[in-house]
Amino acid sequence: MPGHFTLLKNDPATAARRGRLTTRHGVVETPVFMPVGTQGTVKAVTPVQLQEIGAQIILGNTYHLNLRPGSELIRDLGGLHAFMGWNGPILTDSGGFQVFSLAKLRRVRNEGITFQSHLDGATIFLGPREVMAIQRNLGSDIAMVLDECPPWPCARDACRQAVERSHRWARKCLAAAHENGFLAAGHHVFAIVQGSTFDDLRREAAETLGALDFPGYAIGGVSVGEPEPEMLRQVAATTPHLPADKPRYTMGLGTPVQLLKMIAIGVDLFDCVLPTRVARNGLAFTPDGPMNLRNERFRTDSRPIVEGLDNYTCRHFSRAYLRHLSLANEMLAGTLFTIHNLHFYLDLMAQARAHIEAGDFDAWHRAWISRYEAGATAGR
RNA sequence: UGCCCGGUAGCUCAGCGGUAGAGCAGGUGACUGUUAAUCACUUGGUCGCUGGUUCGAUCCCAGCCCGGGCAG
Image 1 (cartoon, rainbow, N blue to C red):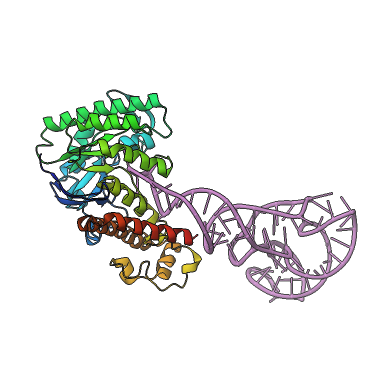
Image 2 (cartoon, rainbow, N blue to C red):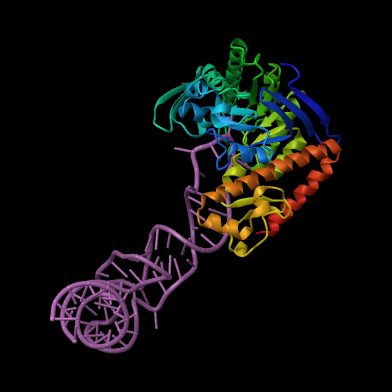
């Protein structure tokens, strides 16, 4: 499907790009942050609320949805969009990561992965064909290939083996998507670059997969425990070797500052559970660093989390009230914090897009980072 | 008025001869392709009061004070 991704502008001072990705369920303006909705819901918020805060595209997860409630059920009920009431684009992770992070007794062979469900212990096999069939059942707009995500740290030999196995699976996933008309119908399939901390393996992976002409490319195997500078180094070691005219996606990242730094490296898509997870634990993001609303200093604070920020939470509720809700374990706390944090992330991406268009992304993002880090330090 | 039971951290309670613990609450931190409204750490105490026995008492004994119950 040619032309599904359009580069609108390249930043003169950095590798940042302003782009536009077309999917079956709408257009996505990049750089973009994708809220994570693992089990067919972005935890604590409704699709209408997601729409209101400007979400363009969300994630679903093959591993989880396949175990429960099952992809055939979702297919029979009209696909994931209809099932969960979200009409925008959906990217589904292949489940490769979950198999490594959750499942017990897994056995990885060239054909695929045999593992036990973390829910009921049932033995399940996931290979390239299975993963693509599931994502087809879900009706995913962007399907991810099955990959092997090596842990950190990882020995070079083990890493090379994971990289090669991932390539084998990527080819099979792509072939399956061609065969069954998945790609022809306008769905996308993204490949995943592994390589752990070995720059040459990452480069090799980027070039090998790049030659296969996938609709998009992800950088995987990051945020698996390595220090932040190492993570950013891996991303920077990969992006220059990916096709310039395809969208790039770093999986599972990151903090607001990391997002800006990766945009400057040339990444277009991000997803991360951080804003939604910490939201349910009473932490809110602000331009001056993260704010733990459970702290006693907010007990009588009548101000909103961020003065003047245009989201439902900041328009209507005080820090004191949000602190109360969180300490009282009220469900509304999770909802209001999630609305705020996701809006903060999405608004940050909107600002980044605007500054790339305006041509002053470099200066703007440096200033933004300084303020955020100064505030984070002062808060401690 | 008598008899019985109880008084230990902010709350609910454990401990019972060697100067005290838990859960919750409170405080702080963590959270990065979600098994997370989760997890970790942590501040709090003249063990009701006064005597006695003992090398040593939150613990045993006596009296008193304060709750609760039963009897009258």
